[in-house]
Length: 139
Image (cartoon, rainbow, N blue to C red; front, side, top):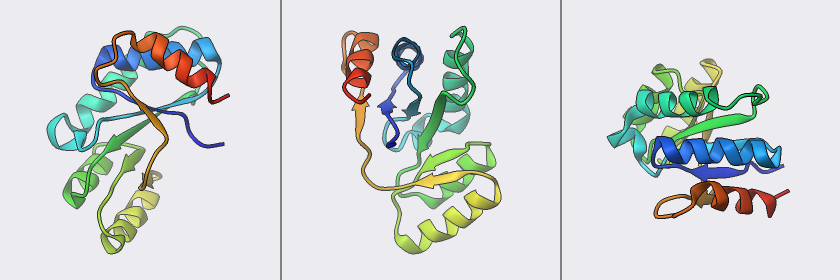
């Protein structure tokens, strides 16, 4: 099954994604905005997702996956891995992607690349409702 990806821009967005995942009873991947590793950083993103998950009672373990977008910057990708991100998105060239993927694998992490079927919450008024509706279409 393809991951159900919701792109967040805030803690409130992360809360909405987690709430909708619980309401729909499906696992969800919470992804950062493109290139968020450059301006928000791995620590901020990880903490936002952890907080949203911790606030949701009864959430099954492994129900939420977090993916930090590192753009095409190998330094950001390596930094995110060093800071404990378990899944990163990297859009750099094939040669650097192969090297970073190998490092990620050594650290027990994953590297994603390419297009993702996703819901971007940027500018959405009712994020929880939008997430729920979007997830229901992907059951």
